[in-house]
Length: 363
Ligand SMILES: C[S@@+](CC[C@H](N)C(=O)[O-])C[C@H]1O[C@@H](n2cnc3c(N)ncnc32)[C@H](O)[C@@H]1O
Image 1: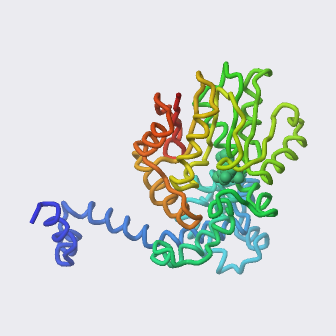
Image 2: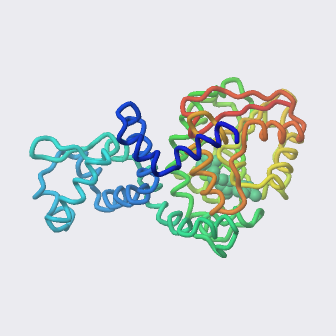
Image 3: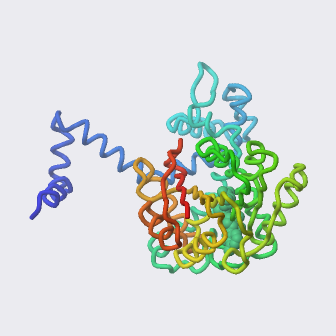
């Protein structure tokens, strides 16, 4: 038997586990491993404690000012016993911190308070949590209609989105896009571009951020499904950007893409789709991009060192629940880009590679 398998058998032996917990030199490692296991087993409880804090508005209440127990009982409507139980749990999870007789924000609470994107993700996870109830059924494709597929209808029906679904998901998308847009643009310069087209541009948050940075004569085009493009058009008009950003409605698999952009962006678009959608989309982009142009892909990438828990564990299952999307490795992105006719492909270093990697491809 090979050494790794021998080690597996040894460590998985209950007698050895008992021995290593008691044997002083092994004890720190044994404790760490037992805590890691417990954290994994208990993760759903931690998530629900965070949800309780958010639903009771604790992060924002404690951002206003540290509060006493009596104050928090009257603000949340919980009994004293329940309030103390929740506060103890929230302190353990670093959502709340004790400040003398008062309760204030812990580091996690500080990151969640006043953070519309995080708050809506936490609430959105109620739907994802329901889909994950039987993970084996999900893996076997035996969950007939997942909550996430209903939430993101385009993921199951490339080429179609129902009338009211566009506005349903636009809020979540917009709230998370704000932060992503700024991060991408801090890492990737759009200076000197003549025409920038954002495909799958959602409500226009990314192009609005570009409008604040690019030269006034840079042409800006948003391409998205017709209903989403209409939502973007309305929102851009409200923000006085209707003349600055052109919106084009269509299905990127069926509608000819506008020509000659010298920067085309796909921000969190490809991972929603299987290769049979991504390959023709990249080919269509290669067909219209200016000869000196670049395609910029921004999304989580599989096997990113330090990002595996987000890309492979979280998004791997999120996209499964949503439909047929997948998080791709860099190597797979390159294969698809080469096959579509792009030759110069590079990664651009990004500040938060565990969340979003940047891949640039040129003809
Ligand atoms: C996850 S959202 C990302 C939106 C935005 N880029 C962001 O980062 O927030 C994916 C976007 O792709 C658009 N999309 C999906 N399928 C499409 C299709 N067949 N044609 C055009 N756009 C599509 C969706 O409407 C949605 O706006």
